[in-house]
Image 1 (cartoon, rainbow, N blue to C red):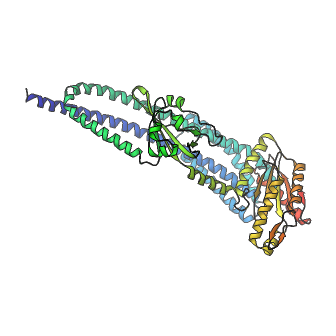
Image 2: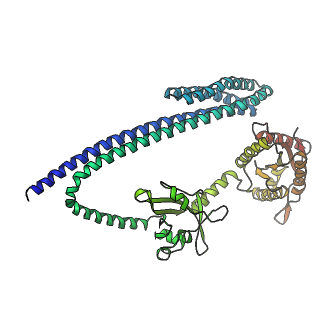
Image 3: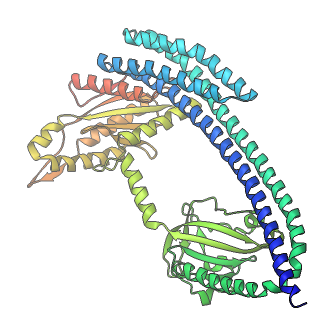
Length: 516
């Protein structure tokens, strides 16, 4: 009996080990096949989406090259844009062939057919526009551009629908793969039940291994706690009711609460978050956590974390619900980090990209964004928008006589005076050394002329002290133009106002002229 028992244990262990190996091999093989299929489907659809995005980009690029030919007077530049325009046609054909070679579903084929039908109309039209521009027939080309714009918008809309269809197909394939994985798990569950029947009679042999595993788990828990105390992120763990269980040192420092003081308290009492825009308290996560199945985030990317001492830090947060058996919420881990400095640096870089560092008004890039936004508003509501183009008269003589440092000081003072003459919501920009633009909202030509006259009069009173004396400028020339809803680009209004400003200078300077 004593001899058979070890042999029986050895035989049973061998059989169980063999069954487990077979089970593991079948499981890994099947799951690997499902994973490979998911990867293949995702790669295929991602390639489709990339091709559609690239085709959409080529369509926009061709239109930009065409508009560049319209706006540029230099024949060399127009020739260069003409060559680029023709090259993009070949790029589109190559992308089209690649997309068709990948295969399309019936709905994708219908949408793509609509896109090609529009292209058969707009491509000859754009070629005609470019040919006219190349020959210098700008007036005829302008009429065709107006005809081409709605066609281009329809074409880009079709491509957006195509991309949505491909994404929907990707999601459908992912759901099917998920169903296959679930079936595999059911299969594994059935096989596992059979293996467990053989495992029961050797359980007493595994006792020592279980004890070893418990010791390993204890060591792992200690290691986890040690890790939490040394990572750079703050970590707070709560129970399902939202009462704090543990806090690592970073969380204690950022919240101003020690772990001993915070343990057992409601999370919202210790971990006080506010919306950085409005300052109101961020809503709790109880309802979201009850329905969550993975890592979640609040609607706001950045949140303010209050400190009892009055300090307030900007944080990024990730919330990870931890579920027990049967899907019951057991614990919640709140992981957050202080991003105050990073956000401040990012905001500064963003500001520098759109503002003039000397005068602190918008630069050309920032003004371009304003023009695009306001042109969209004008097209939607027909609310009037006017544009002033301001050129300081004889400013070069100021730099020559008093130096660039004094000239810069005068520029800043002049900017402040211009800003004081316009209304809240109007946008002032520095386009060049001594050239400025002002976009006036809800302002027709008559009101724009009144504001321009106020600027012209007010600017002459600006004086800068320099070496015991003061100096300023004699005047400025202003051109006025309207931002038309039918214009393909807001910079047409800038060019019109610039031309009017040029006429004002030719007529004697220090005066205002309306664009024809």
